[in-house]
Amino acid sequence: MQEWTTKTYKKEDKIFRGAFSYHRNENTYAEELFDVYRDKREQTFHYVSESIVKVTTGEILNLHVEFIVNKEYLPLYVGIEKIMGKESAKEIYEYNPRRNYIVYKFINSKGEEHTDEVATAPKFHIATPTTASSMLFLRSKKLDSSGKNSY
Image 1 (cartoon, rainbow, N blue to C red):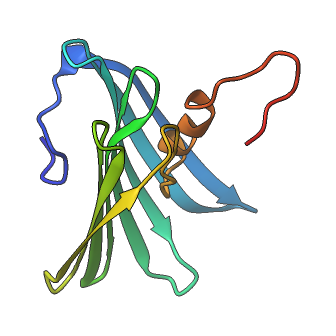
Image 2 (cartoon, rainbow, N blue to C red):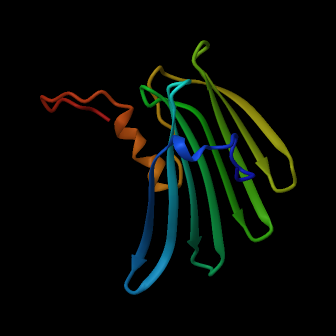
């Protein structure tokens, strides 16, 4: 288990592994590695991503994202950790389907924590800075084959 994930993922639960690299001209600016796990007992999918990005100042930004969705691809838990040098920030989104709200937590590098509750619509998506979980937006929408889709 990586220290930034909420649980230990088993190798036999892994259903997909991938990587992205972002190039411009002949320079590599970012790399992303991700794994997708299926939890058959809870009927959820877990997207675990790590990304290393070179920012315009030349510093390295490390991103860790854990994105857990249910079988309808609605986010149940999203954890985003950003680390650059000595500074870090962690964002946590936890969805409560019974009350239809999201508990949002922000923790800075000093350990100061801010918590808020946000009411949400039954269908929603949480954007993250990694490509693997950003594609989940399309899966959370009901597609109409007649071309009347609205996003």
